Image 1 (cartoon, rainbow, N blue to C red):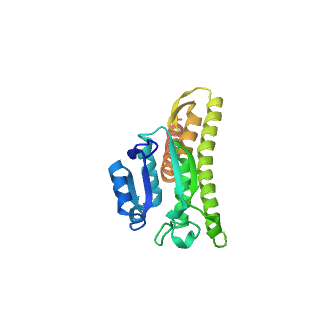
Image 2 (tube, rainbow, N blue to C red):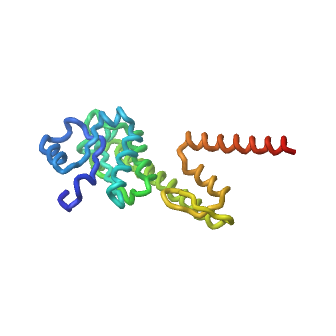
Image 3 (cartoon, rainbow, N blue to C red):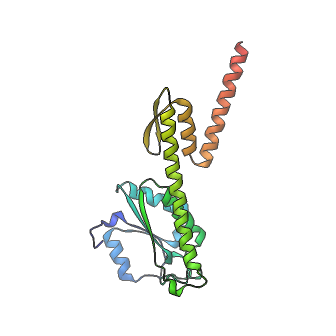
Length: 212
């Protein structure tokens, strides 16, 4: 906020009820910062919470910067995070959140903060922070590999048509376009789309044989 970032361009996820003073809460409210408490994260689910927050920011910003504070974790999982409290997130939830951020096309960078190595116990906090970075990198790899596949399919296409892939238009032929679209769909819609295409193909073969 002090650097001029509008409050409606900020979303804080996993805030605990008694972790911050009332004055900080008022500043956030007056600035228009969206605060999603940890109770709401658990009720909705971390993946849906992060996806919705990123999509909302994507509508008002060209690039998204993620500040991943390790102290959002439960104190037992982050003894080297000075601000961590009992009742925070589980490591598995934070790993999934980091991966979702890596996969989002508008996320440009991430930093991992609030770790004091001198206060760590058996390196548990440092290992958790490293796993968060790897989870983000894994999500980013999915984004990059998908883009690379689309690029090569575009180069190999013969009879091209516009196909929307990764929020941009690609000129692909019908077979490669279908393959790329299936690869970019979530798991359940991908299965449904693949099954529908197989069923249509079987029906076409059946009608062709009957016509013969």
